[in-house]
Image (cartoon, rainbow over all chains, first blue to last red; front, side, top):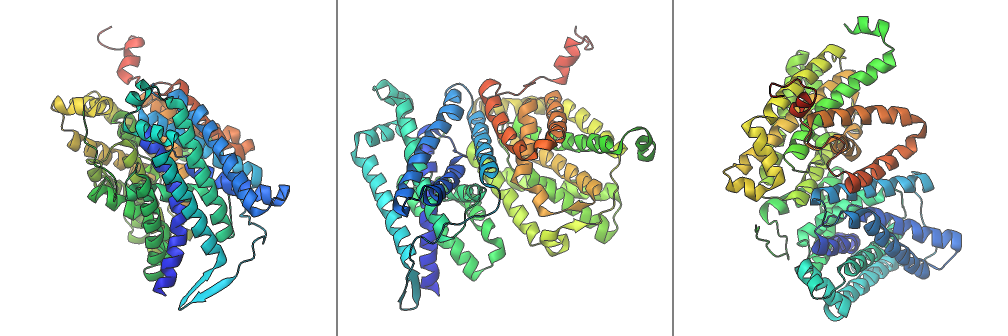
Length: 291
Length: 291
């Protein structure tokens, strides 16, 4: 029972982690909670569905297509709603603008697709395996492998590549980075693109795993992923991975051993506790307030 | 009074006028927290639900008189405002926003499982005690006290915290105490609005007080003018009437809200009447002492 729940928790957690990465990267660079991120995840799930059912692509290509579409969407959102505000107005305005985008996108999808939940057609043959007391499906394995590949790829990109170096420079000091000749706007666009692509991958996989997708799926998932990012330490990429997976495990364990009616409250209770006890999160760095 | 009024005014309009009044009270509370003191709260519906449920249960189950129940509901909301205000001492803008969302979600999930509150079905048959006179009488009192507060030493300290917390602190403003004060006062008004709402609608359920409601209230403050009483009133009036006018295109309504937030933040981050005080209006219209 315990090991079974642990595996389910890790599967759920890896999807939180994929979304949380987008939050944490954007926050690390522009100090903005990108509220529309959950909606981008939802658009990713729907884009995948569109590519599978209407265009008729195989699921692997649909996943890549959804990621590409959301990259574009993420960049457009940043361009339209966040860039005009940057540097000119307070962080409060940017945050409110982000909420506006989030509401806009979820209602847009309601108008396009309606509020009824949909699901992916049975395109993947799922086989179940038994290992001791733990039952797992090929789908869970695929999800874990894809998440792992994406996260390792991201970590390598941030650590090794030129643009990754620029991203790290921007998150340390955006003005100094600009003075060093880094095109800050391009780095920010790139960050939004990468974060959105990861969220889209998460969206497609969750929609297949739970066999449901609907226009408001992003709101709750996005907020929980943000909790995960804070739990791990916002701004820290490994933190988002650790935070996402631990939140997934805690939520599944909470449902299994405590009560299922409070499922949605668990993440927020954890968030509030973390912020009160250890605001910098598990792996984050303490920020000293300076004038 | 209401019977007399309904002879002259169409019941539909009377209803809208009443709801405008309730929304003004709710928005004035949020304005104190977010508009004046600059602490972004996105869970005002949580305070509203506390006031609504407490007062409704008091009148229905314990036979408490309406004014006492209303006061009780407001006090419970204020108490929770105090507990939410406390952790804000350690939190900055965006984190606080998440905590308030989390708090409102926890409250909503709580009421979904709350036996005396009828769980997901909600409470019905609440005595309809809220009248035109109660609402607008309380609006007048709230506006008057708010205006007095904002032109007092405390009110100016609130504005100082919003403009620059560190500077305010170094000028001897006790930021901690004042932020909590703003939260307590704001949530008191939230609870009051909730109590009035419950005793007007005679039916409440947890879904009434969801995230969308919080955003709607935030929109009123942001649209009208952050930190401005006339602005907040204007925002509450506009955003109560507009949805009624847009009822034909109801599904586009939220999309419009979202776009409105983004556009406002880009072009007028302080709202339509940003920081216009009653005092300024008096001066402009030549009513003040120092013309």
